[in-house]
Length: 249
Image (cartoon, rainbow, N blue to C red; front, top):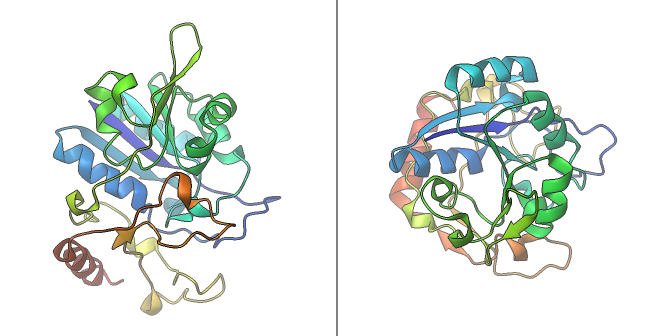
């Protein structure tokens, strides 16, 4: 099957979002791509945020690929799922503008907490609650009612859902592949907010070595989709870092 993973070109005008608004590596999509590829699926990843692409250009790439599933997150990457912008304006506008005949899948914090509302507002066909890395491939191989955290519309346009949440085995995630990703466009050092780190000699990169958190801060949304602490294999993390250093990060 063919999966298109599209990171929208995020905008934050009028939003109460308090995270960093600069583009970061779409770690969730890169991780999902590795799992999908390992199971024999074809994957096209388009980061419209990093590449500053408008919907018509992305739609042309999708036309050439002819995906079966279009996957769109509801929050910017670098794990901002724990404190996302509250509105769904950007994913809603992008799903409508791309106007794809494929199955539209939404991932991220909004659907993990309120899947029915998220599906209705975005126009998605499927919402995956929790972490989607290992549940995305199952959409092509399993009955959806057997997929943890899967919510969908049936033929009568009624909402149906499977129990549970997607929880990824982090030790199964190998080094992320940046060979065809525009690493050089990442001109930002995370946690040094806009206006710093623009010099290419100071370009940063994000690396995910673990997921989950042992704390229970009342303001954090992580308990519903990224709670249990899990580490990746050290060798995978180091191989990924070496790859990024070789690209100038």
